[in-house]
Length: 377
Ligand SMILES: Nc1ncnc2c1ncn2[C@@H]1O[C@H](COP(=O)(O)OP(=O)(O)OP(=O)(O)O)[C@@H](O)[C@H]1O
View 1: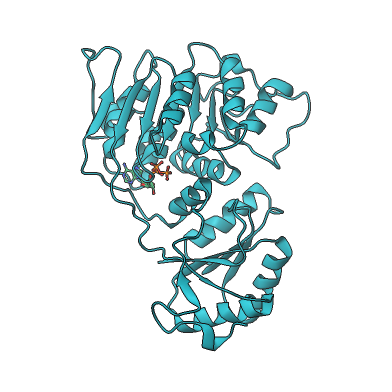
View 2: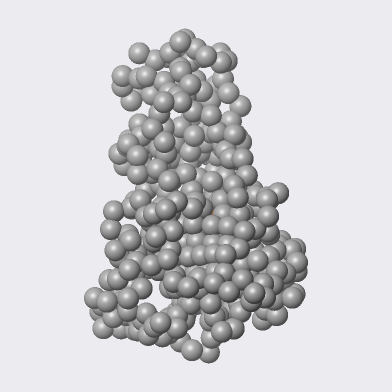
């Protein structure tokens, strides 16, 4: 029984409590949300900590992208993205990632500090565009996170016409017996493992760079560690391992050392969390109409920049989208039935502000949400 009267005017209404005791968002969802709502780099006041096997070996850090001697087309892509200078983690990570002979790197820093941009730049500069077979594998824990990484790679390689990327995620099919021609494979562990070991769409011996991103989320995901190890096992010993994580627990480090032995380890201590623009509440409702009314009330009473609405079922999401469109809202639906390209385009439109409301099922969330609203900005 929810209606206008039940929605709070301001703080602390009896029937709308601060939802502090709600279960923590799944890490993959939190990470994705952070990427979507983020508008720029998270800067850090802390110093980088570096662990090397030989502390006497020189450690370079660069204050400009020019000093990295990147291919001009790649440098142009970096500037086109609006990056003027390397972030703190990039200052130290990039010279290590690009050094010859290649060396393994384990890097930990919180979300938003520039890890993705760092390893994407390294991946792109290690590729030989004249060779038409996979040379880089980059693993992400979920479909959506893989797409985010692929998008960064696509943007950064705008001026590198001959570098091609292929997603190895659910819904992407390759004709049996064929061989992939793209130099970069970005995907989830299960799909990549299938493509490498079961279908042999690519030759693992030709992989020069193996990237493991969001490794802390993988550690917590059933089966991912094992799948990563199985892919790792068929790669050459000389393959450069790049291991990235937002946190630095014992489990993550055990995983890191198994995937990327003899690594240089770099860490950047965490700044305060930056999600203070997200507050959580819940409203108790009995029917979907109640929930819809509650939603309408929220729209009536609160100034909302953008909202993400998580629904438990596809049919609920579809129903809600139709109702909201009828009310004149600019709404997008992100559902499991969309193709990779369609999902990318939906997320892009939302990020660009063309759509004010994103309704989604557990495509974006692993939790069980009933109209879990998330207001952004
Ligand atoms: N050198 C840079 N200068 C300006 N902006 C940058 C730079 N490097 C990255 N960014 C931007 O900062 C934001 C965070 O970067 P990035 O996604 O690489 O961080 P991250 O540590 O990988 O975080 P996450 O794991 O959440 O993706 C992005 O919007 C990215 O485009």
